[in-house]
Image 1 (tube, rainbow, N blue to C red):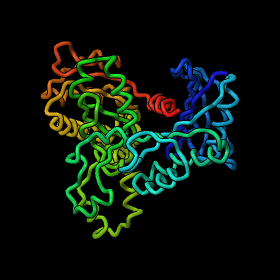
Image 2: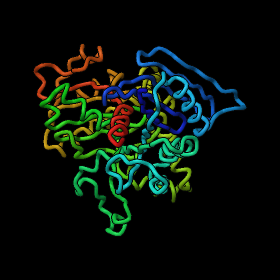
Image 3: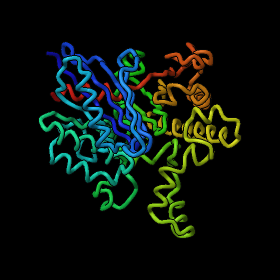
Image 4: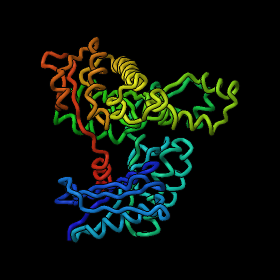
Length: 391
């Protein structure tokens, strides 16, 4: 009987899953899907490897699932549609691994206690990431579970890159730059050699642009610097997150506006970014289709902030050989890529407008000193690889 690995990626209002068959030591996608609108308007859709729908489910208003119920539904679906395969392990995306976890780890109670203690560092993500693990511990106690961390990839950064200019006692307590989206960057680092071997060995900036957005400077496939820091709130402007902001603004909001920590957290995490600036939407697709001036300005500001960070990361690398776009916006929003690439002409990026409009894999001209690519990310496959490795 063949074996399979499941991957769970729980967000604040969603639960994504993928099921991979283990074939001769390699992984093959069997199905993937998502429970979207958890606790509000939950709907489950699953597709096979070709993209054909193989399962759907909706919940009534009175029976809306939380993450635990969504996890149980997905687990039951995976078992029912296993095709005779035995589920041998589940890999989980966990946003924060703190200073301790630099690689994936088999989950036990001691590990869970440590990961739950990191929840204040990633309040939008960590509790939801861990919820399915708790459910599976109860529902399938003998099933191996593996936590894969978004922070782990950035552990190659130097102390200079990770240290804040704060008193040593605060730094010693774990206040440092961690960086996130590491599973996405790790996947791109594994895929780039097949696209451009020279670029993979050189100086590359990867732009993971989506509702959550960051950029990473890599040299020889290892992280050198990244835009996110102590939390996933830092760096680029995002869908609803502000990104980097003068700390004095926070003090002003407390002292002059009378805002408390909860109000400020809501502002910076849920009410800012593309949504706050445009007043229209946090979805880049909606903004690009809108004729509202504020929508256009929000897109322009998003690109401006990304272009500034690109210059900073190129400085950290002391040059640039390749620029890679990934993530929902990076892979699909040609106007955003065009704006950032044109702003990087001084670095040597020469955009091929036709290739960019067609979402081609290479979007730079042959004469470009810096190669520019669009590479779809696959965090689920990266998690499955790690999970298989730990088996």
